[in-house]
Amino acid sequence: MTITIKNKVAIVTGASRGIGEGIARVFANEGASVICVARSKDDGIKVVNSINNSGGKAEFIKADIREENECSELVNRVIKKYGRLDIMCHNAGIYPDELMEEMSVEIWDDTINTNLRSCFLLTKPCISVMRAQKSGRILFTSSITGPNVAQARLAAYSASKGGINAFIKAASLELAKDGITVNAVSPGNIVTDSLMSLYGEDGAKEIAKVVPTGNLGDTEDIGYAMVFLGSDQAKFITGQSIVVDGGQILPEDPDSFLRNE
Image 1: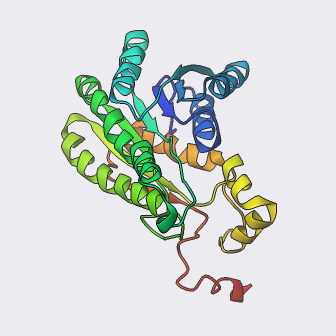
Image 2 (image 1 turned 90 degrees about the vertical axis):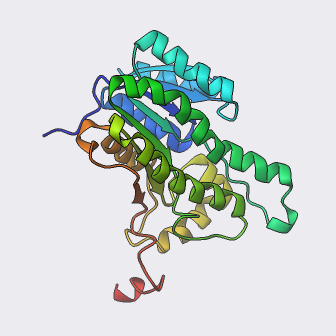
């Protein structure tokens, strides 16, 4: 049995860089038609051109997933062109690095709106479409930060990701009988431009020391987990979040596995 999303139609938000770009590339490599969504048109088109030049199928749609009308229009455009929507993968997110006492309400609200409120705004227009198809995969990029572990200066981000994991449980119950599954992937530390700009080479090496596999993840690691959850073979999995972190959250004592080396 081959796990595949070949010939599926998939939306990927936040696809202009980082994990979203990695997901979009893996989806295209696995044979899906990928609609790459982002606010940055120039970056998004670069990703799409690269995918198409490599033999994949992708197009770019500029949309702000914080806005209800733009989420609805996004889904409508996809249905008008392709006649179906098999996978909606919401990856777009922000993570402001600020102490709570210094964080403005505007930054808090923007983080919640971008990361969590958008889950509802993107899911809502997918429901009638996927219900008519009697199938659909709604996927989210969550995080180990919030649901599993905590980090100072990331209170808004942590709250939003914890909210995503709660959202998928409720949404999965509402949609299970319609053949629609709702799941998430919770990444650990993944090599992206954003992570490297935040921590630098030396910081990334320090983070890798507390990952049992001894390395940070690649964006494709998240993409392949999403492929599985988006496939027909994952039809009996819903309301779950798969942790992809190289075992980072496992040690009770972060140094315990190091002492065994």
